[in-house]
Image 1 (cartoon, rainbow, N blue to C red):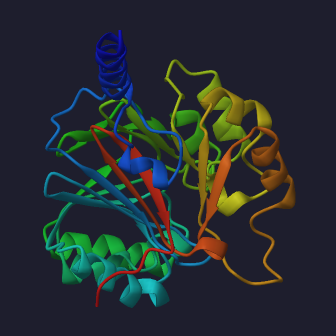
Image 2 (image 1 turned 180 degrees about the vertical axis):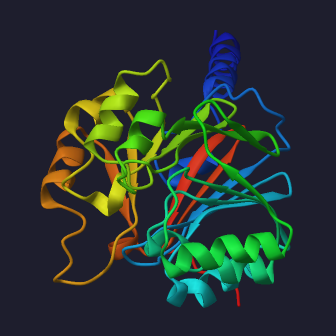
Length: 299
């Protein structure tokens, strides 16, 4: 009888061990991971949201190809360049200028001067600002293809791709730089991240009335958390569990809006902010994704 009990106990222990999964290395960052990704397990996507204050600079890298979404103010350029060099960037497949505001394209002319850029992808709404004209001139002088954004455009980056949702012709016709922002969905396997640039309520309304799939894991909040964007109905349509905001760390800054932060919280979204968290890096692979705060580049 004692022998039978020992054998039975050993079998039960073996069964229990076989049912315990190894700890997911991504759990140390958050509990949510994208599952059932259908891309090559060797592929990886990295997204760096730079700490450039009330401005935008985002670096995307996938399978040895690179793209930037905006480039911050001209005064942010040294910081931008250090991150690019730290990540081993020599050639940018795309430099995306979401709209002509200087907090988004201020450093773009210097970027095109110092790095090889295959394509400058911009909003159809032009500007006579000094920053915009220098950007276009530098692109022309360096033989960079200048392409104006159109809905349904698809920009491939390794195993990932960016699908352009906005601006539509009706948004461009408003002659409002923010509403005519280039809005794109980044897709990598089952992972999705929506980049809203500075699109506001009208842009959100157009998106909700479009046939585009707005669902995303992460949303880059529009216009630095402005109270003119990120309506509750729009955020509910996107259904993201994580939000990223690029904003300035100053007490007198109006961004991000308290109302937007409250809305994000009420929807149960985890919010990461460059003004309080520093630069943010998102790593995505076949196991899911993680979000690191306070990212520091290696000088």
